[in-house]
Image (cartoon, rainbow, N blue to C red; front, side, top):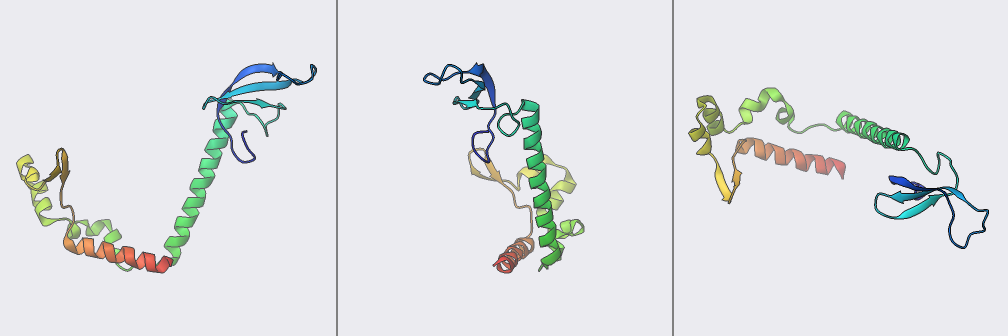
Amino acid sequence: RVSQSEWAPGCVAQLWYHEPGWPETRLVPYQVELDDGRLIFAPLDKDELIRAEATFEKLLYTEEREGEQANARYREDIEARFTRKHPAIYEPAELQRFLNPALKDALRSGGEATLRALWNEEAQGLYSLRLFTAEFCELLLEEREHFEAWCA
């Protein structure tokens, strides 16, 4: 542990470490070299101060899972309270309606040349392709504005 709330990975550099200037009888269980190169020592062999890697990884995993669960609860809360302005843009069944007709035709034909004709080279090696209709883009922008107004 490198602060009250932060852990940092590292390796034990020395057992029963003694700093110059300490009394002869003062030893600490571990000197640790952190992955960033700093040297620290653990004054006591306690889980609150130093942990084995497996425990450290488990702690990170647990914190990550708790964060994911909190995010999921937050998302569920938003979804329960927010009323969508254009629900159709979220529906997979509406995808055909919102896909660019030229793209749909090119995909049906299966020809590479037909698809390539839809690409625009914006810069060397960087291409763009209109995926959606103008209607979808307008609805999506309105939905974003509606959500931002709802959040305010």
